[in-house]
Image 1 (cartoon, rainbow, N blue to C red):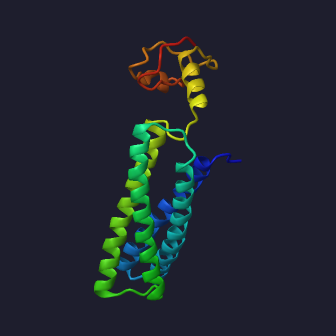
Image 2: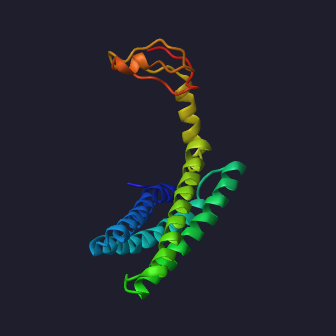
Length: 194
C-alpha cells in the first residue's frame, strides 16, 4: 500500500488537522449555544486530534530521514518539523488539561482554552501549508528517478480522448475549452499536440 515513510506521513497527517479544527468549531459553537453535546464533541475530537498529531509527528520524523532533498527542502522541512513538534506539544497539553478537568471548563478558564486552541489550530494549518510546500513547490519526498521520469514525460507529447483537444498556448488559460468539455493546462506546461 504505502512503501515509504513519506507516504505514511502523507496518509496520516490530514486527519489530526481536521479533528483539531473540528474540535475548536464544536467548542466555540457549544460555548455560544450552551449545548453540552457540542462541548463533548469538542472534547473527544481534541483528544483524538492530539493523539493523531503525535502519530503524524512521529511519522514525519521518520520520513525526514528517508527522503531525497536539497537545501531548500531541508530549510523548509526544519521549519515544518519545529512547528509540528510545537503544535503537537501544545495540543497534548490542551488535551491533558481537558482530561484533568473532565472536559468541564467554565468562565475565564474556557476563554483561555478557546484562545489557546484557536491559536493552535492556526499553527497546525501553517504546519500543513509548509508540508505542502515541501512536496508541491520543491519536490521533497519524490525520489529523483521518479521526478526525472515525470519531467521527461511532461516535455513529451501525450494523447487526449476525443473532445479534449485544444490549441491554446500553454501559458494562458482559455476557459472556453473547459466550458466545452475540454480542459486547460497550468501555466508553464510545455506546448504539445493532442
